[in-house]
Image 1 (cartoon, helix red, strand yellow):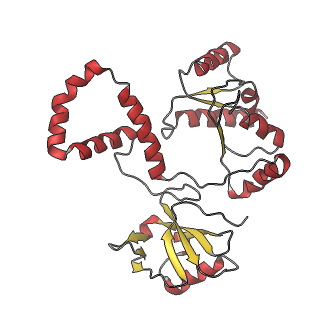
Image 2 (image 1 turned 180 degrees about the vertical axis):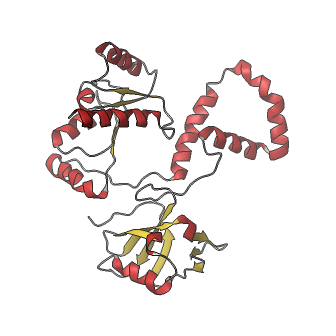
Image 3 (image 1 turned 60 degrees about the horizontal axis):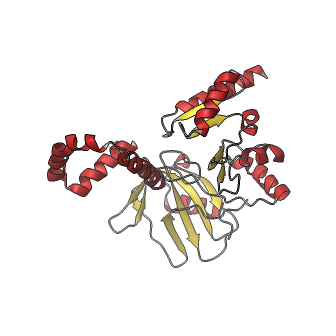
Length: 286
């Protein structure tokens, strides 16, 4: 389908140019001339850039032992395609990682791959800002280490002034934040969907519950001032003793004693029910 092919190419270009992608990236697809494809592959093998975005057909032709990470933007609909995609990493006895993004309605595709191949997926939520910052900071440190030593002395006076006014740790931390692209602050993200402006909370109970609607009733009774669109995506944990959900971050505050305040009203834990900000996504009901 020419229209679908055009859409795919457009999406590849948008992904390669997205400012959230910190690595230099090149695209590879069937609409690129063979000579240019060979040049792109040669530069990728030589490590001139670390990220390559390609279609299934082109991905099957990549045979590079040094590929450490494969990212599937969506789960494939057949087993063979997944094996070809994921098989681009961990070649020649090396270790590697294959990550697959999926929507809730696509989870059955991954379950089918598990059943048919024996592969066991580790289901995790989207990375949180603190995890992304830690990884980005490591990349920044590598870039700092590559700075030519003869240039550094030109910045000594400015560095001394900055340290004198802010202190060494604060000055260096601010520089790392700016270089990492977080000078404007950190936006909260859902642990389930990575959507900005939402925070994932976790209710825990000392007894099993049958349905996530149990938590909806808690909100109706205790927080009638919270609108329906402020809280969403209620999901029951696999042990049936918890529920995760997203709340609009502007409705959430953390008090001085660490208490959770929703829509201006503090939440009080009891012996049987607790509420916390989810730091990682627990195993959920299918």
